[in-house]
Every structure is written in structure tokens, then in C-alpha cells.
Length: 246
Image (tube, rainbow, N blue to C red; front, side, top):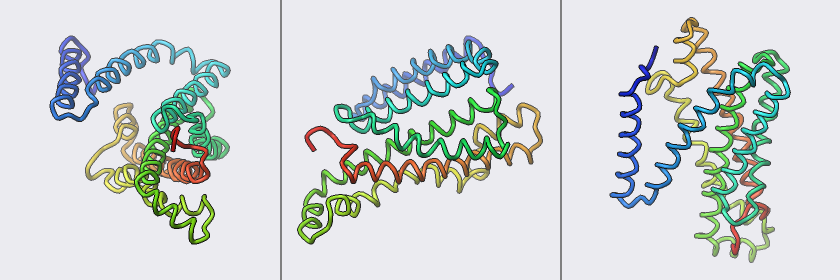
């Protein structure tokens, strides 16, 4: 077992969470309350999932409903993070565009069996990766358009279409959303041993099989995130994803 779950485990978690929140507050990062809420929510949500996941994976309707719930929460989270008072629901487009093709390929080819115990974690990994990429790309693109609005106007004056002028300004910043995934893939096995790899080893799989699973996860995530970033950038350029008043 990787961790011993006892009273000390709970105390250490609480101390680490509190330390993170206090550090954020003392250094004026402005995220102390969010850190506390995120930690408490994570504990509650994982506890609830632990209770129902064994039932969900046995029944197809429940399995589909659970995956759709993951998607809905991802859309809400990404959309509200990008544009709290704008058309946040557009965040569902890049997440779906990134996840659905990759998930379809791995299911149709039999790489991932169509069973709950395999589909739920794989879908969760891909949806989570698309969420992160969408948030980063959307926020970076909109921030860049706000600070470099004059360059957009200059592009329009030169005859560029509004979409093209916005793309020229926002493209590089939005592409930075791919950096965390790229760095994780580049350094895997050298800096970190990701969860899928460690989980397979702890489950008794051979190192070779565990490495193959982790490679599949990383490459699949890159594919998901590239599509999510590209679609997010297009939505921003076309004015679908925007902040109210901008």
C-alpha cells in the first residue's frame, strides 16, 4: 500500500491544506479561500465517488450518466473560470471536440475495453485534461486581446477580418496552454512517475505494461489538449467565448 490511511493521514492533510491557504494569504496571492474550498470539496467528492463507483461501473445507464456528469461539471468549471458572466456554456465545445474523437478511437480499436472499470478513469483523465487546456487557452487568449486591443484595431485597419486580427494577437498566448502537458510528457520517468504508472505497478502489473499504459495516457492527453486549445482559440477569435463588456 502506498499510503497508510489513519488519523495521522487526516491530520497531515488538514495541516498541508491549511498551510497552503495561509501561505497564499500571507503572500497576497488572493486564493486562500479558494484553496480551502477546493480541498474540502475534493475530500467530499472523492468520498462520495468512492461509495458509488462500484455500483456505477456495473450498469451501462449509470455509467453513461456518470461520464456525462463529469463532462457537465467540466464545462461549468471551465466556462465560469474563463468568463464568469459571459457565455460560459461555449466551453463545452472544445472539451467535447478534444475528448470524443480520442475516446471513440480507443474504444473502437479495443485499446480500452467498453467496461466501466476501464472507461470511467480514462474518460476522467481526458475530460480533466481538456478542462485544464480549455481554461488556460481561453483565459490567456482573452487577457492578450484585452491588453493588445490596439494591435487588433491595427490589423482591422490593414484589412484583416476581425477573426484573423484576433487570431494573430491571441494565438501564441493560447498555445502556452499546451506547455504543462508537453513538459509532463518530456520529463516522464525522469522527473515524475505519474499516477497511472504507479497505480499499475501497485496493482501487480509488470513495469513494461505499466509504462505502456502511462504512454497511452500521455499521448492521448496531448491529442485531447491540442484539439481543445485549437477550438478554444477559434471560439475566442470568433467572439463566441468572450467576457461581458469586452
